[in-house]
Image (tube, rainbow, N blue to C red; front, side, top):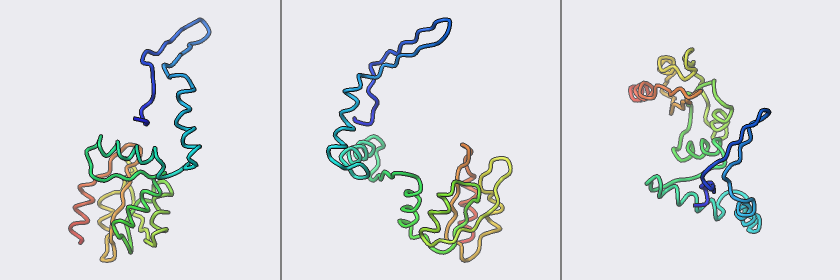
Length: 163
């Protein structure tokens, strides 16, 4: 598999009075240049090159899923997900997120409706989301902040009640 790191195994560490020196088990540079050279020779530097396709195929097999798409960044993934789900109108989301969250909405002509966040975890506050729901709300986009998971069940319950 091309996406696995090539290592020899045992790493070496030597300690002296002035420093700690670590020698990794990575193979020689010549072997590691083979893949970038092939990418450069093919002139396919971005999506859908041979290694991109191979990585997708291997991930499908490894994860045991039917479909999988790789994206260059999270913004493109959000834009595509919103288009795939045919989201339109107004969507409730958090103001406490990377700008890609809001950009993905604007680029799809979806109006963001910002709802308050929980003061302790910085995620969408399900009670505040429920207050923000209207007949024009088409979706809720939550963001897990700093490794804190959103209260997805509470958000889903609010969405289901207000369908």
